Structure formats: structure tokens, C-alpha cells
Image 1 (cartoon, helix red, strand yellow):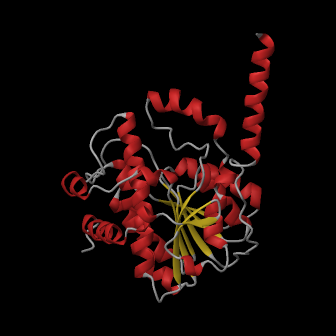
Image 2 (image 1 turned 180 degrees about the horizontal axis):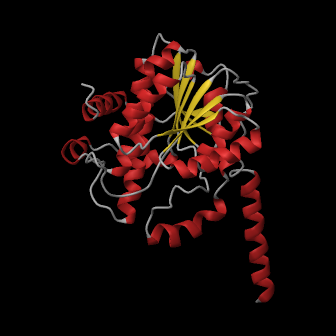
Image 3 (image 1 turned 60 degrees about the vertical axis):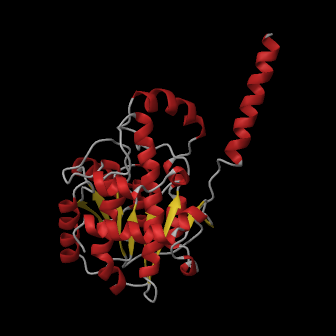
Length: 318
């Protein structure tokens, strides 16, 4: 019996190690681009993939705007980045994506203080139920609507700085998502309910919004020098689930944690979309593992247009 258990253990360990060097091994961004004189914004840059992305861009010489809600955590991240890279061009600017007023204030402050914008990395994300001060579902507001408004308000600066790029971090979870326009119109939320499963569903819906937003943005940016991309970063060990409930933290997380990759690996597709030359013709596409993927659900141009128009209405832009 003991020998059988040992054999099973060895087989399981061998399978896990095989997965680590094949399926779970993330490709790396191969670009050697230098970014001195370039300005980038990274939302949610104080932790996880955002912090790693900001670190890499700062190392390449970019002026990095850390767009974060929590000043204390952002300043802590800046200290780490400055120590690691030696850059003195890493700047905190307050941004709470759950508040449309905060997004507007951030954009106004940025446009007054910065002369160019070469990269906008819409990285921040949350899994949290409830409503925002504006009456929107929190996940919808932070993961989609705040980034939508931020991008629209900064588009002219992006165009003036071209060639420039907008990169939005989505998730493979978008494949399980849907956009219920009736629910959005009547409840300002992606779906109803706030138990653990319902909150995760809303997260998947919001990630589909990210992909559809990128599809419509690309159409509206035709004949400009601004391109845009959405992406799946991989299944990453980050603080994304820090606000989740019992089942997510104590049941789901322990089961999946052996298969998670670190934030550095998770940032590689973001960096690829931000820096890789020659992908301009793929504007509007969805990437995973540093390569474009075709997903018919994520190319629904009618849904993308409808989501854009509804988002404009929610933000008071139409």
C-alpha cells in the first residue's frame, strides 16, 4: 500500500513538473525597445501584474505614471521600482476607477502636467460585489466603465503622441461572460446577486466588456497612429481575489494555487502588446501567451458598438 501511494505521489509530482515546463510556462516578451522620452500610464500599478509591468517600463527608461487608488501602497511600490531600476521618472497620480469624478480629475491633472502619452495600460481589476457611489456595480465600474472613460478622455493626447498604444488586460474568463444590456440599462450592473459565484460571473462578464471595448476602439481609431489590444495574462498569483468571500479564498484558491504563475510571467503578454513592433495590423485583437487568438464571441461588432454607446451614456458623453 505504501509503495502504491509513493508511486502515485511520484506520478502526480512528475505530471505537475511537466505542466510547469510546458502548459504553465509562459513565453516572454522579446522586445528590446527603449522608452526614454516616452510617457506611460499603468492603472493598478501598486501590486501584481501592474507593478511588474511598471517596473519593466521604468527599466526601459519610460516616464511611468502609477495610476492607483491607494497612495500609501503606490508610494511603497514606487520605492521598490526606483530601488530596482534606478529610475527617477516614476510618479504617483491618484485614480479611483470606481468613481467617474475621480477618473475625470485624473485625466484633467494628467493633461495639465504631462505633454505626451505613448502607452496607456488599462491593467487594474477587481472581484468585489456591491455598488459604487455612482450607482454602478463595482466590478462593472472598475473593470470596464472607469477604463472606458479614462481612455476616451486621453484619446486626443494619445493621437498627438502617435504612434501610441492602448493595452487592456482582460482574461480568458471572458469566454464564460455575456453582456446583458437589459440588466445594464435597468440596474447599472452586469447581473444581479452578490454571492461568490455571482460575483465571479460578473468578473467574467466584465472581462468580455474589456475585449468588446477594444474591438470598437480599434474601429474608431482607424486612420490614426493609435492601436489597441486586449489580452489574457495567464492564471496569475496576485491579490485580485483579496476581497472575495470564504469559498473563493479557502476552497477555490488552495485548489488552483499550484497551477498559478507569478506576476512577472503574467506581465509578459501585456509587455508584448505594448512593445512588440509589427503588430499594428492586429489592432483590436485579443492576445494570449504573446500571440493573437481568434474568438468569434469576442469579435461581436454589434455588441461592441452597443456597449460603447451605452458606456458613453453612463459617462455623460452622449
